[in-house]
Amino acid sequence: MSDPFSAQRLDGRILVVTGSTQGLGAAIATRAASLGAAGIVVCGRDARRGEAVAERLRALRCESVYVRADLAEESQCRRIVQACGERFGRLDGLVNAAGLTTRGTLDDTSIALWDRLFAINVRAPFVLMQEAARLMRRDGGGGSVVSIISVASHGGEPVLTGYAAAKGALAVLTRNVAYQLQPDRIRVNGLNIGWTATEGEHAVQTQSGRAADWLAEADASSPFGRLLRPDADVAPMVTYLLSDAAQMVTGSVMDFDQTVLGPSGEHVEPVPHDAGRGDRRGSGAGQQSPQACVASPGPRTA
Image (tube, rainbow, N blue to C red):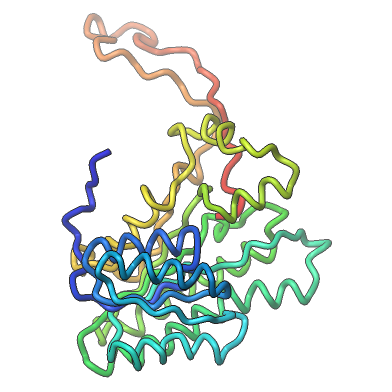
């Protein structure tokens, strides 16, 4: 598969990528290292996985340090960025890739779960952006922040009440902070990603009772034939937003999914290219009867 993003380099950049001990965060960190990043702070709660990812990045000639952190704790969020400043002396990019997707409806979401969802999915990115902006401003060279949000920020499924609300708040926070940081040339953007095949999503699906091969069925039911993939889809878009190729993009929260929000109903067959070339005054020349489409189950956690 050709890589349309290959020219968008990150040579010499220093980055912090949260949630980078596995899954999507690890894919983003690995791609950034392959595109020339000079240093990356890996963070998460699993030290074994974190050190393994850091070692993988060093093998790509990218200096890396693992910082163990629970994003539910304010002081540990601040410590991540402070550790970056101590190790590398600056920060060029922050990726808020970590997130909590615990399910709950209006009726069964406890206050404790609601608070934890907001602590990890909204407060942590806020604290990280606060600290990152201070470090980026110090040298005056600008920077880039990318937050992984979710199409659930538009409303979400009933079983994702707290998660959807938190992601909606993160989308608003992204736009607000982007405006504030314009004078500092710090760009802030977000990706509303759709249903993505990650390690965490596999756990969610199997714990919900689906078979271990759920992904094959999910891929087949998707409009474009597969779910999003961390390394092939999401990571390249994140590194694009971190790179100079996106130097005029800020305050954007992009729907990054194969679902088109708003329109509904059955698809229709395309009109043949030679339809209606004769007498165009006829009634309904070239019109086709509707063809039912297979509806996508939609994103589960994103």
